[in-house]
Length: 192
Image 1: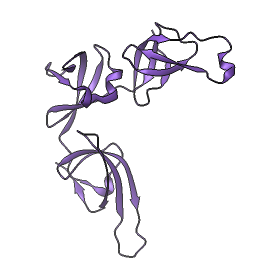
Image 2: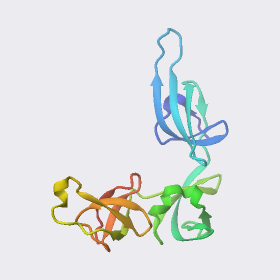
Image 3: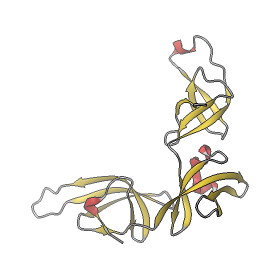
Image 4: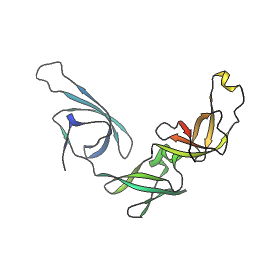
């Protein structure tokens, strides 16, 4: 397996530090002011399994292994008291992730939805959601004429998964909206 040099680090890269898998969140190259000193690479890393954030500096000469991480297509099947159940679309094996493992990502899951599952050493550890998902508005107040004059051109809405989002005043209950899975923000009405 090829080693990755600290001088080659980029955002979203996966590396192994002290035997643990991390994804690079930020990377900054600090040039030394003293002659003969080596350039330092300052990083912010997120642990792939625990989501803990680590700030660490490395010399440019340091090397890292790539962790045994693979993305596999999967489908979300259903959730129950035991967790959230998925099917690996390559092997057709079923697996589940707990509410703790998913965090807020569970609010974007709809039955039969296709997504990517991240596996570490062959075990499912986290999801990679599509950039946007289409969800039905289950509850929102009606937009009243003249509301936009007060400056608030959005209103709160509850979506079918329990996600709370701000939507434009013209959106009604029963409509399907497209939501950004990174920010939880309304993108547009979903295309039929």
